[in-house]
Every structure is written in structure tokens, then in C-alpha cells.
Image (cartoon, rainbow, N blue to C red; front, side, top):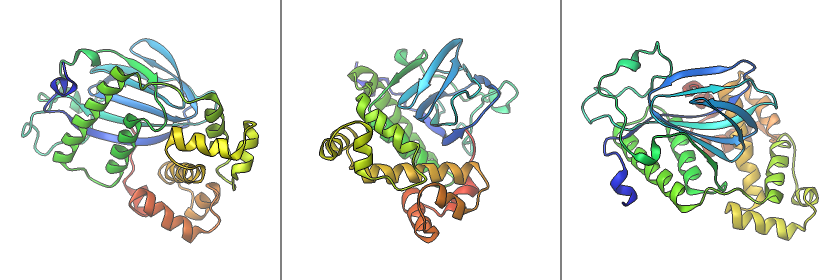
Length: 290
């Protein structure tokens, strides 16, 4: 059966966000009424998904089927960053006016009893799935796009439905294609080093020394496996960290610029708007937790 034949026609993405977790207590969601897809972008953590305890690290993804339970266990290795998407598999057009772009996560939530919100019978997506993909995998690129699209303000129903169908198709393709593979350890080590040095300048020569290879070899690794040069990757990481700090803290923008290795706050403001589609202050105003 082709992937498109298994895509629920009335699926819709209802929420998407990127969050920096610093929890020192368990965070428990006992009844999530959505298909929930998570991607660990940085750091590592342990979760319990429908009774399974899992160790999740940067590059991993986790899919939770309808009516799942999820607990984020207390942070033990420092903060970790992930992006998450809630997809409702069956909400008939016109059954909810207007569509509420939110999902039920706990038993007391009013949306637990929404009569038109239902699961869809896709056999491959009826269980917990966890794995890892290349950083430039199409699944992760699509997740990035959806998260950034939701950050742009109140979503519209029609594109949210289109994105849901694309996401389900890409998830099924990823599971069937064998694309869920890790990056080479050498490159993973460099990426981890970059994430720990975002508050200062980082040169290609320094990165090459970290993994005992030539600059040309490392540059080629970035091009082949991440589809971008090292400098571009570093800038993307700086802007991702900036978005976390803007959304998750009350730090002034000048301090956030400094913490992301950008000395000029005016240059920082322009970069932030270029990457995220709105000013940092506007971005802070619209962010919500997963």
C-alpha cells in the first residue's frame, strides 16, 4: 500500500513549538489526545512513554500514538532542547468552529471530551516509535518548518491540514526507507562542541583540531552530511539558542546577543528577524510551551 493511501484525509496540526527543558522534577502528561512527534535537537534526557523508559539524545525522535502517557524525568545532564508537534489524526472540516489550536494532555483538560476529535487507523502509527535520523533528514527539515510556521502567529486551518498530511507522509516514508540513521561519531562530536561554544567565536581550524582531521575534510563532512558549510551551521545554532532564550527567559536582548556570540545587538536583531520571521520581542510575545 502506498504512503498516500494511509494518510488520514482530515488530519490537522494543532500545535508545534521548540522548548529548552530545565526540569528538576518529573513532568507528567497522563492522556495526550494527539499523535505527538518529538525531536531532540540538543542534549539528552530520559522519558517514560506508555510505560517504556527511554534514553533520548540529540538527533533522536519519538512518536507517540493517540491517547499516550508521557513523563519527562528530572534533568540530570543539563538542559536539553527539543521540538514537538501535536497532530490530530481526524477532525472533520466544519466540526469545530473555529478550530481550537490546542490539544488535551491531562485528564482534567476540557478538550479531553471534544466529541469530534478522533484517532485514525494507520497500523504503523499505533505504537511508540523511537529512532534517530541524519540532521538534514527531510523529516527534521519539515518539523523545523512547521515549528517556525506556528511561531509566526495564529495559524490558519487550511495550511495546518496540508502540513499534517505532509508530516504523516514523511514520517511513514522515513520509517520505511531506513533513513533513520545516526551521523558519523566524528561529526556528532563537532556538533556537540559547537553547541557548547555558542557564546564565543568558533573557527574551522579549532573544530578540525577537536576531531583530529584537516579543515578540508571537516568542511566536506558538513557539506555531504548536513548540506551546509560549517559557518552556516554555527549561525543556525546561534539563532536556535537565541530563540530558546527569547522564549524561555526574561533576559534583555543585549544579554541574549552576548550569550549567542554576537557582540553587536543591532546585528543580532537583524539576524533574529531574518531567521525567525519576526523581531525578538514579537517572538517572545507569541511563544507558548508544548
